[in-house]
Image (cartoon, rainbow, N blue to C red; front, side, top):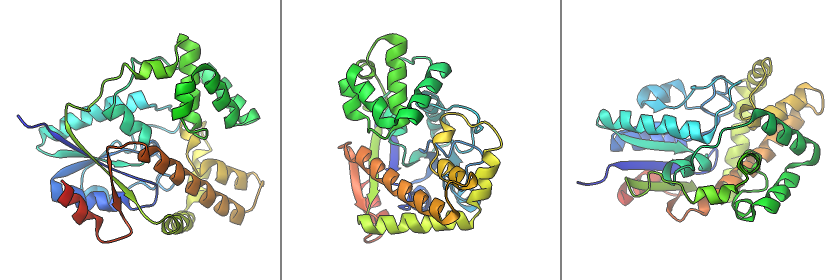
Length: 301
């Protein structure tokens, strides 16, 4: 019996994944599952560049708006929700198409997750406070001291994963890299194809800058103002745009300064996304800046 198919369309922010996913889903009889750690939150529509209402009407989308901004939402919870959606989609005779740029979510799905270690909010808050006071690099060096293998795989700017690794070590006394070895995921059980979008770096940066401009035009400042009225969870507060707009609202810099800072931080985030996905040799790269990438993907499938 042939293995059931699962498709992944990944890549950096602002490269056009959402629009291409709609076209791909129509061609391949798919439903789309978001692979984005911020699109799961209600109220982060502009911040996370959620697919529009018309996009969602054209093709069924899943795992959007499933958590409140005051709730923590981790990779284990995402995996559990995604596995359920996969089976629901198959039951309708469709194929799951994961679309987004959160590499960790793809990893826990395909490669699995170690036996869940409970979170400790007090410990997390303490570690986030240390990062705020001494910088993320300090925590990365701390991780390197207890788990060199994990520190080598986690980017020094990936604060959320650094803190999770330190949390696991402090709660269990075991390096998270040791627990990773015991994982089991979708790999080998399904016919998985992963397509990554990339393009000329300067063209991508131009697209990012244009997207940020559009975000401001669409009401980004008001969206963040509304979000800040409630206590954001530690995970939601990491959304790019919240700190930048908060700085403007607090008078640290003007609106033009906030805009440029958001562009810069989004470009840096795109670099980190590409670094993550390029380490995964299973990804088939498609040049989104050349001819229609849809044809190349369909041909490869």
